[in-house]
Length: 387
Image 1 (cartoon, rainbow, N blue to C red):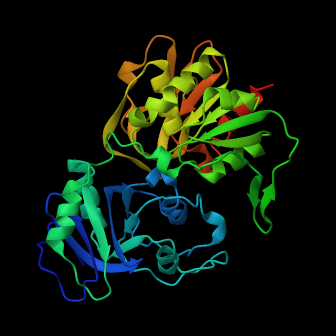
Image 2: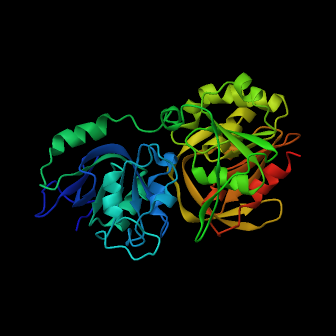
């Protein structure tokens, strides 16, 4: 229905629009919540898992373009929500949302999206939009939905142009839980749903929440740990008072360098105490910062459920799930920090380990069940190292 080369002339029947900061106007049909939202436009190559994507706090401040044309076919349900805090602000899809066909579904995707307060736009040439992002990088934009088709394009454009973008933005504080929590959820099984975590399990992992996905904690429980989750700005003394056997650094949104201003000193202190540490995504990046490396914003980022990553110690290739727009610059890894995994798409860093420490991290999301079990060994490796 719409092409990124489109003019600002509104076609008949258009009830949704995406306005890029460079002035490009992309028309379509709105669905989900009525209103507008500003963010960075990215693309995700997964064929399903869209409910998990939209509720992943790592997507805070982003508008997700799904490259797979049929989104919504499996519907939505309460079990597949990754977090109740802010996730993606909106999504762009090719085809209109159709009725779901899935025995687990409880809601139609568009209705669920509306209940979550997120804006959707269908009828867009998502291939063309994806090519645009690949060539020019992820643009800032405003996505809007009005059933009557009334839009103030100059005002939307101004809003897109004035939004500062993700670089330099600390979003972890915005999506982190506000108080300490003993994690009680267990692993999911078909027919029975989520189990309960054993209260007396050992070892004890303290997980720092920078915008975490719930399934990470379930995987730590499955690997044998008892988990306590704490807010992003929890101090070293507060962490140590919980008597952890190991500390986990969660995923999250925004610029790792900005979040690192308060997180990195704590991580450094944990490393100095020889505390075992495991980081995923943003947590991996901040572990790298604490070890002396630098991070940088990527041109288009990695987002999808089919990203091949090479494990350097033995050459094994893992099919991984990714969601990141920043990465550790592998050229800045200092002496004593070993690169353990690399992307087979572009050679970017996907894993590090600190020599002489029980500290490692990966850029991808092993809890997202890509492969589907290619990467669960990381949870077993971490929990198994805690004694």
